[in-house]
Length: 209
Image 1 (cartoon, one colour):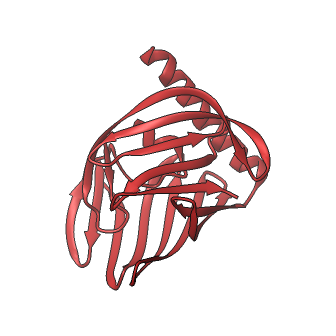
Image 2 (cartoon, rainbow, N blue to C red):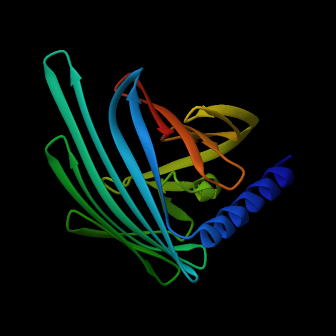
């Protein structure tokens, strides 16, 4: 079963890379829901340039709970070379608390600087950047806000289908468990279709528009 899962995942990653190169630049837009209420959007811009892939992520959330208002603004730039992460730069306003993160390849791992403090991450670590099924292969995922390392493992829950933008799309359901938990649905080409998780006791969903 493990070998079959690895083969399926490897095939998905190859298809995703081939699809990105063939299609050229594209933008994925996700609606963010808290329960059934729309609270924001996230856009993921993929720009292949030879063996380099540049990824720009922008997310904005506005939530009102009773008399309280919460906001979240996040911008992130990723550079992938030869299918491997080369660098990440991110800025976040987490309800008034600013964070800045940089992650760059250094030797056999990564140098990670968060809010001016520098540390290291192993080569098998990856930011919690869910647009790519590569996160399903990694035992350590770093918060894209403050760089906190999370020990995780992924489970393949099998094929299913989703309603995406008014049409039925075949998908494969995966679950990340551990220090963070996410349910993820990817298309056969590796495109993220949907993510669900809990935050502060609320159900949060990101779904492709």
